Length: 263
Image 1 (tube, rainbow, N blue to C red):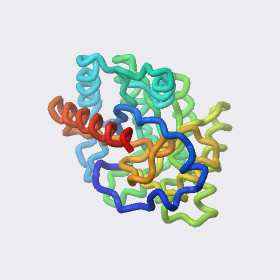
Image 2 (cartoon, helix red, strand yellow):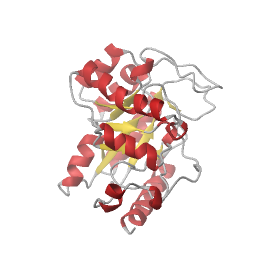
Image 3 (cartoon, rainbow, N blue to C red):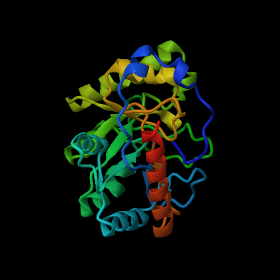
Image 4 (cartoon, one colour):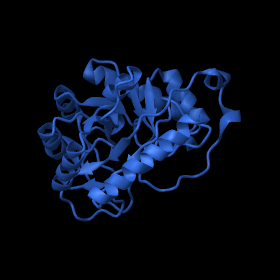
């Protein structure tokens, strides 16, 4: 789960490895949206549930502004060609089972792609990292394969959804490396994307993600010293986000993107 709230101050530039400091940084993508669960469940203290009807209206809003939701892989490939104009990254964290049953039909209706970040250490389990609930089922292996077969990009959210900035070296490696291996075996395909649980990342965690071979990683609001393809910022989209709020978030993403490019 990752919500659009301030995050703790994290290590900045001096703690980065020399290779990261010397690496050329490309500008951030214009806008990447964070979704989680898509269902009609009214009880949601964490504001991570969007109803299918609300998602439908939000994608209709994008369509009305000649914007199209795509996976992170498609968005970054378009950016590399200088062709990202009109594209918005759609990401779904935690890998809820309702993605296949509720979100996928809506995405298909609007011809949108997306990236789902799943937890291969909790296949078919529940979101018990949320103490207040509600309890929701997570995708199992078959559900993940069904999403991939429908053209959805599958990325890793770690093994079990823990704060990686507090993980031991052994646990960090398992969460980052092992999750990629398990997903690659499950899908019989390479896995390029990673998403930091809770959106939290520091220099040590970023280095582990780089070492594991991921091509990109999504955060929420990474610290000023962390940027580039392994710390992509995103904006939370919730059930209260109607047209006016969506427009404000789009403007916010533009301002933040320009600030990151100017670093």
